[in-house]
Image 1 (cartoon, rainbow, N blue to C red):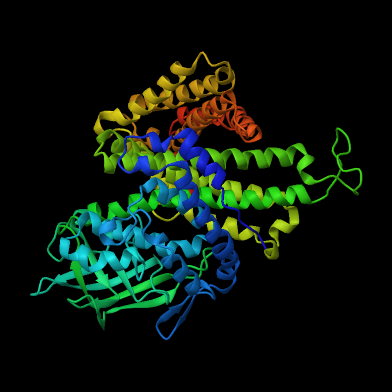
Image 2: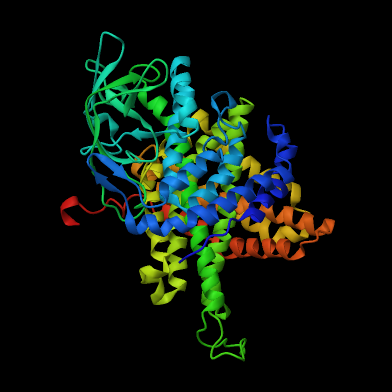
Length: 592
């Protein structure tokens, strides 16, 4: 069975050596001293490695079962969920006013990575609840916040989001679920939603569904969509649970992965619902939840890559196969371990350099969210909005690819279920699809985000890269190995943007056909920036006389690998973008 070790040391490096969180001017960050964050991460690491990780395979094999209208979760899930609740982990970064611990989002992200890596399907129950609670926090009335948030923050009640219908996925303007106003101010919700993660289960007393629906007589299309709070059990004025609402589970979807999470078809039969936010402004409210979820999904891609890499690395060190072409490394055994072979090293270095770069990217993104919210910083808000499709799309595409590489290290054993590697690949696959398929993320990036506020957020990113390079060009450790490759990659990104500006207006397909490559080009530049900054932090630690020389030297060596072997992919993506739409759109539909 695979194992999981929480990457506490590397998380500490990113938080303190790279981001220097305790020195930040963001409210609440001064408390994030290394001893404090270490204590939190160590405790979370113990829970995830000892309790959640052993249940990962259990959830995969058993799945969820619908019995007499109630979804039963896999053995051990409920006891583990109780343990997570008792530890206060579900409200780590939620407001103290509603029972949370009030820590910055960056700490929730660091802990969230460990939860997702150890057991993605399990973690989704609390993750969806966090998103639903955030939407209520941002758009609910005081009465709604007081009624729902304390129990949702503690996960005594969990939450969901209901968007997709059988006939419409991305095009939500086509939805048919309707909400009929009632004299008491409530609405009658009728319709069917599909693919609803954590739609029903036996681990919480109530489930608070956030449901998109149309009020009859409202505007056509997406402008007529509103968001409603629809509890599984109605809540009385005193907070106690009342009658069962008109919401039921039609079936549990049979999926490729995340079997431990109950992905449900939800039927709403004149269920009582309450408007969240303004009428016909449902997408604005839902996007509070979706943007958080998209960043969380990006984290899932990175987290699955990490746990897969950990196990592939252990296998490569243990499995004896063949001899090192440069000389025997294990003379007392019949063969050398797999890790001596260059192609295995290439695969493992691909994985390691991605995971560590992506971890830095995720936590930097979380810092931007904290800066936007806690400092009311519009620039940080604009920058993380630009980065959201990159975090979601690039990290999940690459994360899935890394789980495949990890599986490949095992050879035939990677294809055998008892080794557990296929679960990481199957679980990672959904992250490329849900919360907006990655093709849609690329379209959003090129079609909307780049041009937001006149493109100033993209320009701010380029300025950030340029400033870092200029400030450190005298550093001989960084110059050739980090700064020069970063400069070349950033130039590729700017050239791609110029191509879109010059060719996208006269033929929008020129931009749209290159959007996927642009998302990946952007992602590589972001990880290149992270690696250059981490290299600087590692070099400074070495210059200062650290006791852990090996850790920082390893960080530099891993960064050099990314810059030399992974970052040059930007040139390939630029070449594809420059080819335009002609070859993409050449065939008539009938000729495929």
